[in-house]
Each structure stands twice: as C-alpha cells, then as structure tokens.
Length: 295
Image (cartoon, rainbow, N blue to C red; front, side, top):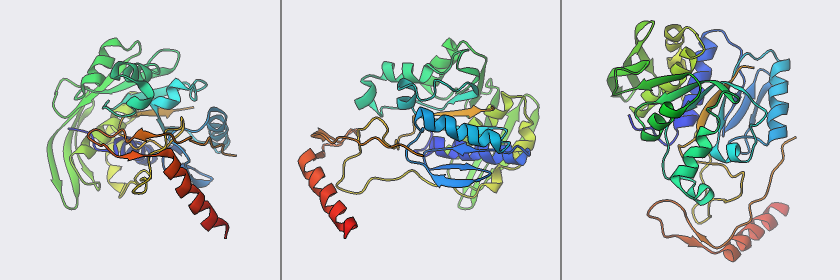
C-alpha cells in the first residue's frame, strides 16, 4: 500500500501506542514532539542535534524508559547526529524523490539511509517489501531483516482483507505467531503500512505482536508536521523540519540549539513546481515579522 505523507509520523506514534499496550514505559522523539514520562515539548527539527539527542536519551534513562520510538532523517545520518546511538531496530519505509537538493541523486539518498543498517549501528532491520528501494536494502543489509507487506504473502508480517471507512481502517494481520483482525482509528489504507512498520519492529525484538496489535486502536490521531506558510520558501538549512515521507523509524532500547537557514535564490524543490522566491524578498518579510513581534 503506498505510504502517505505522514508515514513516519504515524508509524512512530503507532509504535509508541503498541509498546504502551505491552506495558513498556516509552519516550518518543518525532519531528513534532519530544515526549517522555516527565512531559512533552515541541520538537524543533526531525532529529535533534547530537548533544541534545544524547541529553534527551539520558533523561529518558533516568525516568526508567524502556524503549524510544524516534524518527531519524537522512540529513541527520549524513551529519552524524545519531553516530552515538546503537539501535535495537531500524525500519525503512520507502524512498521518494524528496530532499534531492541535499543528497543530489537517488543513489546517494539511498546510501544515506542504508548507512544505519549495519551491525555497528543496529541489531535488526525492518523493511517494507512493497517499496523498490526497501527491497534493495533487504538484499544488501548486513543485519537480520524482518519484512512486511500488503501484497507479498511471503513477508514475515503481511496484511490482507483491508477495509477502510469513515470511522477507521481494519485489516487481517498474519504473523509467524498467528492471525489477528486489527482495527485502527486512523483513516486511510496507507495506515496499514504504518501499522505493519510498528508491529514488525516489535516482532524483530521478540515482543508479543498479537498482544500489541490489539492496542493500536487506542491511537485516535496523529499530529502532522508543520506546514510552511504560503509565499515562504521551505528552509534549506541542514536542520530544517522535513515534511516528506522518506525517513527512517528507529527504536532505541536503550537546552535546544538552533542553526539558522540562510535563504538563497532558488526554486521550490517540489516536483512540478516552478515557484521562485528571491532571498531578498524573503529577508524583507522576516524583518517585517520581527518588527511586529518586538512591538
């Protein structure tokens, strides 16, 4: 099933809900929020700076957190922001033509993702067999690979008999340990792939997948990523908030710094877009907004 634009957001939240159903104390690091037993605060970027990330994980450990569902952007991998983290499970959802202004080519983009699917970075991989690049990763990964699919019954976990309605989505889940009917409060067939990502991540750790699946319906909504205001370009800074679907969900068992983006004359990078926002005009708008806030 093609993933939706909120793929990793939903998969991260579903994984958090599934772990909670199993009684695991969780922290969560997403592009929207950083949340743990001590409270929640808004996220400033998809993956925190390296030092900030380590501080967050240290706080979670002091709060007896047992697992941390988190999003890892391809930018963060290239910049070494997660070099100090060893993941119990990493999941590859899909790869699309986004962020090529940073990576240059799809092959370099794929290589950035694949860099964390190695024995020195993670213990197990979770791969969506319905995606071409994910299948390529499964064939080359040097760690144990768990697969899921909505089309291939040979995957470790697969879903069929998918039904979507105005009040939710339900499907039949097939696992090595048995079968279950799963219901989601989230809308849309793409949420099945998100749920499979979460459940397969648990299967890779030996957790009770069928027990966890029963609790997924408790998630009634997923906050979306920030949207840029009409007329303003998306920042190209290295730590800009990423709104595309191509990210990695990672599960780690175990004061915020910001870097300004320097606007330059450029075209919006969305396929088919020809909108150009001159840097000079963008800076004038920023100054006007700043003056308004100071008053």
